[in-house]
Length: 336
Ligand code: MG
Image (cartoon, rainbow, N blue to C red):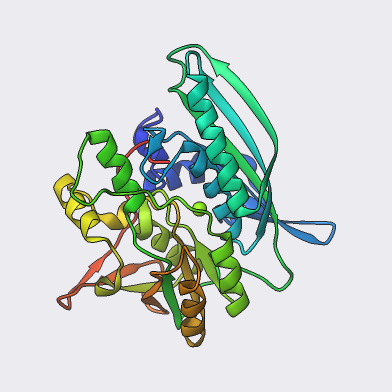
C-alpha cells in the first residue's frame, strides 16, 4: 500500500480495495470459504449448502430517485445470496444512528426495508441499534447479513467461467451511480435518472430453471461492470471479449457521464447482474430473463476466451480493441 493510512479508494471496490483485502484481511481470516472471494461464502453445514453474506450501507444521500438506503440494504444482501444461486431467506439488520437523526426518516427507511423484504420473500429476523454522538457518524449507516440455501446441483461461482461461455447482462448499466452523483452535485436532466435498486432473486430463479448448469453470476455494484468482469476474468483465469456496441446504457446516462467525465462501465449498479453460461444455453436463458420484471433488457455483451487469461478486452464500435482495467481511484465515495 502506498500510504500507512486508510484512503477513500480502499472502499471503492476496485484495485485498492482488492489490495487491502489481500494484504490486511485475508492473512488473518484465512479459510477456504473466504479465500474464494465470491459475493457470498458457500458453507456446508449438516449436509446443507448455505450461502452467507454481509454488507454495509453508507450511501449519501440516504433518499434518492428509485430508492433509499433501506432498499439498498435489503436488495444488496439478497442479491449477494442470489449470486451464488441461493434462495435468500433470513437477514439481520444493524443500524448505526447519529444523535439527532429524525425518527420520521428512520421510519421511512424501515417502511422501505419492509417493502423490499416482502418483494424478495425474505425476513429480517435479528438486528441491532447503536447511537453515536452528533458528528461521529453521518445520519444513518446500515449493515445487513443474509442466509440462504443453495439448491442441490447448483454451483455458481466466480471461478467457473469457461472458454466458449457467453456473457449476459440483465439490463442497462450505470443508472445507480449516476443517479447518486447527480443528486449530490445538484444536477438535473431532462429525463430524470433513477436508481435501479432491486432484488434479483426471482430473476436468478428463472435463469437457473432454464439453465441449472449456469457458471457465474455477479452483481456489478461498486466498481461497475468493468471491475466485475475483471474479477471474474481473474478468478477463472480466462480472457473476456466485450462488444461495445452491445452494451446497454441509457442515452441520459451516457450524456450525464460525459458531462461529469465518468465512464458508465465503472459506475455502480444495484439491480443488475452479469451471467456466464455455455453459449448453447444463452437463447433459452435470455428468453427466461426477458420474461422477468428485472430482466426485460437482458442482452449478450461478450464471450469468454482461453487467450489472455485475466484480461478484459473491449471491442469498440469502430473495430478497435482496448483493455478494460479494474477501477483505480475513487470517483464516487459512499455510492452504496
Ligand atoms: Mg455483489
